[in-house]
Structures are given as C-alpha cells and as structure tokens.
Image (cartoon, rainbow, N blue to C red; front, top):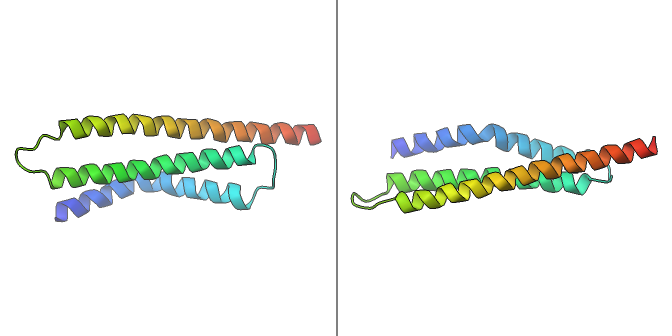
Length: 116
C-alpha cells in the first residue's frame, strides 16, 4: 500500500504545476478582466485546459489503482489501450482550450486597438 500512496503523490506532483497555473489563469480571467470581446472565449479555453488536466490526473490515478489491484492472470492491455485513446482525446481538448484562449486574447486586443 505504501508504494501505491507514493505513486499517487508522485502523480499529483507532476500534475500540480499545470493545475495551479490553470486555476490561477482562470481566476485572473474571471475576476480581474473587464467584460470585453473575447473574454468568454478565454475563460472557456482556460476551463477546457483545466478540465483536461483534472481528467488526466483522474485517469493516471485509475491506472495506478488498476496496476496495484490487478489479479495475477488478468491482462490489462485492453484497459491501457483505452487509456491511451482517452489520453489522446484529452490532448485534443487541451489544445482546443489553448486555441480558444489565444482567440479570446486576439479578440480582446483587436477590441482595445479599435477603441484606442
């Protein structure tokens, strides 16, 4: 059981910087930015990146749990193929969130340039 807890803490340590950055970015966009063109896109993009990071953490914890609780004759190759496919989809979600964030920033900057 100690190896399981150590692996969980290691997984959290790897994901923590991204999770903290996403939470901080979302908080800044939510609280410190005025209503402007592109704000909703940027918030949605940051939320998508945060959601993908959280789901990646859940998926990693599930994989570690499966490994530690696997029976001797049980083959996990099918489960790991599914985790790989879900991991790719989470990468797409995170990338789409980054594009939304950049698109929102561009709209905000264009709006600011028009007002200036």
